[in-house]
Length: 262
Ligand code: 23J
Ligand code: MN
Image 1 (cartoon, rainbow, N blue to C red):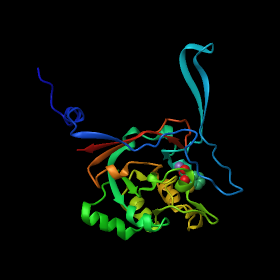
Image 2 (cartoon, rainbow, N blue to C red):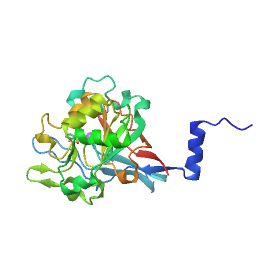
Image 3 (cartoon, protein in one colour):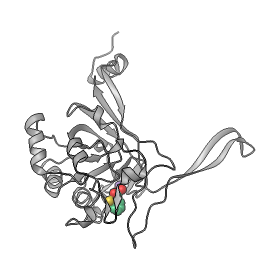
Image 4 (tube, rainbow, N blue to C red):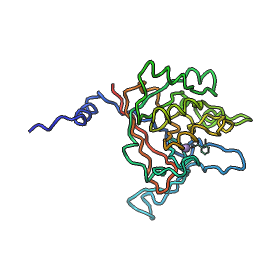
């Protein structure tokens, strides 16, 4: 008896025949992963380190495994609402309390790669989001909004973090764009190619780090250090962004996958 055709049997077939591709939006995670550097007196996150428990040796003759050490916000990672003080009392604020439904959603990809190449401090504006919507349609509720800046093509921590005397310089969202996405569009969250969802100079914004402040304060998520956003269409892809279910977790490295129609 032939089984019933559903959207998921069609998806399974499309995965098999190449009609849907799986694009990995994740950077490798290891000791060379660039880590955000905050100025004193703020505490910083350690780099990734691995310690071998055993490797087919006396400590474990048939098995290899390691202990991992890193900050919750390292490499390609997820920001939970409690990461920021504005989201500290949110009901679904920690990683272990987020419903799985909210880890999957359509991707809206906004391309600022040209602007960011000309100006590393470029901020996406509210008007630029409205202009994107005029071309591609309204951002639906529970979408991931991804900022394609091509920043992930920068090689090495120095180029990627792009620090000068006055701090890091990297692109992001202006306050109006962040408020539009969080309050008027009800997105799941925003994703970026840079080390954090806020622009490099966001320590000097009002409020400081306004993308974290507004997104996390409204129960929204963040995805940082994504790559391969240049392989996504403006609309039509579906994102799966599933962090570790850390008890009380403020964030976690994760593997971010996009299902993309060929
Ligand atoms: C802590 C303080 C400032 C920032 C961040 C973390 C992040 O970007 C992060 O990884 O969430 S800007
Ligand atoms: Mn983070």
